Amino acid sequence: MIWHVQNENFILDSTRIFMKAFHLLLFDGSFIFPECILIFGLILLLMIDSTSDQKDIPWLYFISSTSLVMSITALLFRWREEPMISFSGNFQRNNFNEIFQFLILLCSTLCIPLSVEYIECTEMVITEFLLFVLTATLGGMFLCGANDLITIFVAPECFSLCSYLLSGYTKKDVRSNEATMKYLLMGGASSSILVHGFSWLYGSSGGEIELQEIVNGLINTQMYNSPGISIALIFITVGIGFKLSPAPSHQWTPDVYEGVRDYECNRSIRRQKDHPKMIISWLLRTNQIRWFYFSIFLTFVAFLSVTSKVAASASATRIFDIPFYFSSNEWHLLLEILAILSMIFGNLIAITQTSMKRMLAYSSIGQIGYVIIGIIVGDSNGGYASMITYMLFYISMNLGTFACIVSFGLRTGTDNIRDYAGLYTKDPFLALSFALCLLSLGGLPPLAGFFGKLHLFWCGWQAGLYFLVSIGLLTSVVSIYYYLKIIKLLMTGRNQEITPHVRNYRRSPFSLRSNNSIELSMIVCVIASTIPGISMNPIIEIAQDTLF
Image (tube, rainbow, N blue to C red):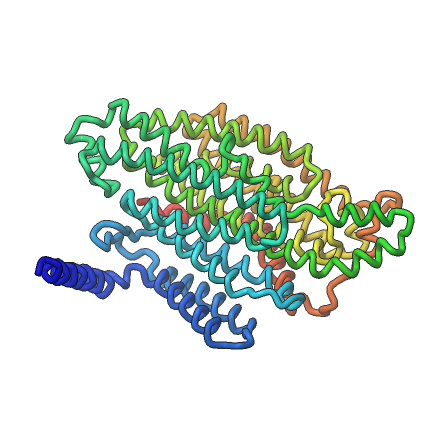
């Protein structure tokens, strides 16, 4: 009898929960319409994967790309609408959140074409790869609109879990497994630290979880200047720091970027060092398969290098600016320390790297230091607008660089910086595209990176961050040095410096660049890295409308 009553109560409770969820989705579903488009795309991918015997790869790419483009379109159509809070306060929609969602969708849309050419080289299943990318994008979008502590914790975990799976996608590679293990362990530790900081914030505010209600709770409990808030600030800064990967939370970044090393290739070359023709033959035989796995990993790295920073920056700005409103001096100091360490260590260590991937990893650590300047400045002096503008340029610069690396690696099977020597003599288009992206990353005029950094540093100078901006200017000069060093190698024509990889370089068989998805993504990113810098004012004005 007791079991029967308990069973009835369980059924009634489950029905109430289901009806409440259905009511929220029915009346608040329009607030997450772009996210619903991605969810529908995920369902279609699963249905095609489970019902089709022979996977129709073009359809899978078409569905993924179409869902991303439709989601971007939905965001643009509701631009400048009034800010709204939905789902019982868990989700907030405003221009500030939506522009970060747009940046994440743009990253995913540009990253997916980078893997198309490699699917044609093997029968490896690609459905899981697309599912992980779309799910990570979905988690990043929910993180941008999160308005309470629970959603802020769950959304990045959705993103992180897909990132762990993507980093271990080439599961037969030992180096990839090592990078995944480091990424997973450090990610789990950072999530624990983050949720511990949330618990201090929750307790200090009297049991509030919504960001604005936490501020009101801290005022009511008179805990806004208590040691508990300082402890919460430290733990949350460390937890978010892992997602942003500034120094000293950067240890996972170079390993995950590198992912695959050519140990087997090097051993085989040493065994055949007395037979140059055998070396070239072996490289041509193994190049296609080995670089397919590596390119899939590089596609993930290109995706992770920008989307994680965009999502984490959106979350950090709202967490620091709203719940820690009364501790602005403290979190400004913490972020200044992180920015200085990131700009110095990231750019100095990048000089010593011989691997192109590890060089870009440390370069990205330095780049996030520049972004943190915008977070510190805030709305008062256009800091958020400058941060958003620079992040838009950084997406095009970074993805364009990765597109060039993937294209070069497919034809040579190497990642060593020295092996890029003389590329201009074999493929001028690729060499020039690579050089433009690197120069834009370094911040040389008249490219977009220069104007993005100029506006970011000017906003920091107006806000009184003289020391921080000075460090940024000096480290930018350092970054120009190692970027120019690579460009010098690309443009060299001396035969003694050209490696066998470039001498036996084979250009793409496509006569039209638009027929190759990698070259198409490369062209888009190169154009976005050069032309927008000339017309900065409209971009700045759009970014300034994102105040929350």
